[in-house]
Image (tube, rainbow, N blue to C red):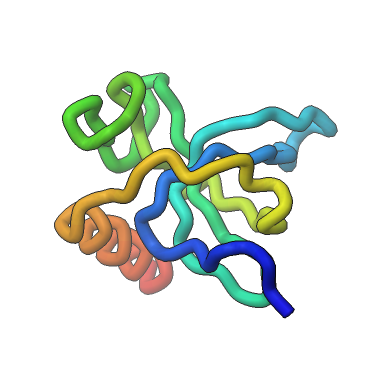
Amino acid sequence: MRHGSMHKLGEVVLATIQFTDTFEVKTRPAVALFEEFGNIVVAGITSNLQMEGIPLSRKEGAMKDSIIKLNYLFTVSEKMVKKTLFSLSAEKKKIIVEEIVKKLKA
């Protein structure tokens, strides 16, 4: 039986993430892409505006202007999600899906 809530596409969450190139674990914002069986696939968010990705502004709910990095995908347990921060607009979710599809077709 599930005790948590299902995370949906476009929810910006604060999650504990282990990076693939190090053993370091950090709490970072990320965008939920989908959840299945208590595992959530998320895209990392960075405040480094020099990086490539989808812009995310303060007006949209971010604490500071940021970039959604679709090349930084992680699978986290729902237990690693500290909280949901906000949800993206339908337009932003559509952009994310279109960009993921482009990457899958490349």
